[in-house]
Image (cartoon, rainbow, N blue to C red; front, top):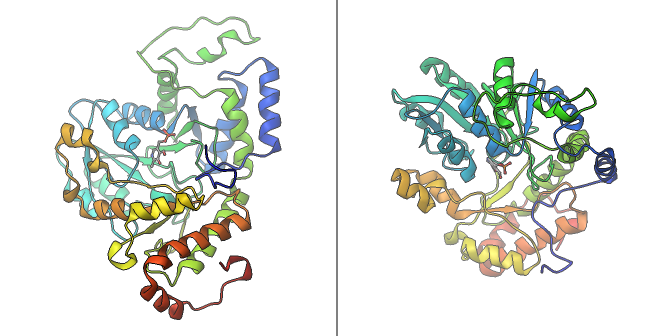
Length: 407
Ligand SMILES: Cc1ncc(COP(=O)(O)O)c(C=O)c1O
C-alpha cells in the first residue's frame, strides 16, 4: 500500500463535471456504447479538425483496426520505432503483418526518417509513426517517404492529443490517427481509444470491426427506435467504447487546453530546476511544432551521475515519488527476440535511451508543493552521488529559482 504522501505517477485529474456525468450516465439506464460515445466522437473530431472519429476500447485496438482497415495483413511489413510501448508492435502482429524497426533520432527520440527509408522492402506497406512523449515526429519527411513508396501512414498519437506539426494536428497527417485515453494519458476515460480518419469508408469498416463485424448501427438495436436486426458481415472484435467511459472523456476533453497549460508550467519548472544537474533533459521543442507535454523524460548516465538508472528509480520511490520508464526499447523484450530475432544493439540509440530514461510525474493535477517535492527528490538523489558535478552545475545555472522551487 503506498503511503498517503505518495505521488502516483500519471494520476488523472478528475473533476466534478466528470463525476456528475458518470452518475447521470448510470442513472440513464444506457451505460454501454450509445449517445455519449457518439458525442465524444463528434467533439474529439472537432477538436482535431478531422471529419470522422471512431471511439474504441484502447489505442491498441485503434491501431489494430487501422492496420486491418489499411488492407495490411499476412506477408506485409510495417515500419515503426523501437522507442515505444509494446502495443504499437503488437497491433501490427495482431493484424498478421510483420513489424520492422527503424532506430530513433537520439535527440528527438522519434523514429529517424533515414532509418525508415533504409528498411523499406517490396513487402513494406505502411509506416506506423509514434509522436514520442508528445513531441511531433518528423511528418514532412515521413509523409514524403510514404508518398514516394506508396505506403500508408498510421500515427500512434497515444502521447499526442495536443501535438501539432507545422500548423497541423497530430493524427491528421496519415490515413489513420490513433489515440489513447488510458488512465495516465492527457485525456482519460480510464481505458479507451479513438481512430481519426478522413475517409468515410475506413470509418465504417473500423466501426463495424470494433463491434464483432456487425452491420452498421447495431449498437442501437435496443434503443427507443425499436429493435433492429443486424447481420454479422465480418468476424470482428469486441473493441467498442462504453458511454460510461465517454462520460469521462467528454469533460476531460473540455479541459484539454487548461491541463496542457498546467503541464507546460511544470515542464518549464523542471527544465529550470534541473538545468545544472548532470542529466540529459528533454530536447528543445522543434520550431513550428507544439509538444503535448505528455512525458517529461530525463536520461541518467551513470558515468556522470554515479548512480544507475534503476538506483535512481528506487531512490525516487523511497522518497514517495512515483516514476516511470518509457520505455525499455522494444527489442529488449524476449518475445520479440524469439519471434523476429531482434537484438537491442541493432538499434543503439533506442537501446541507450531505454536503459537511461526515467519519466517524472507530469500530471496537470500536481500541486506546486508536489512539484517542489519532485524537484527536491531529484536534486537530493543526483546531488548525493555526484557532488563534484553538482557544484559545477550550480555555477552553470543562469537564473535563481523561484522560492517555491527551492529545496
Ligand atoms: C506509445 C503508446 N502507444 C500505444 C499505447 C497503448 O495505448 P492503450 O493502453 O490505450 O492501448 C500506449 C499506452 O501506454 C503508448 O504509450
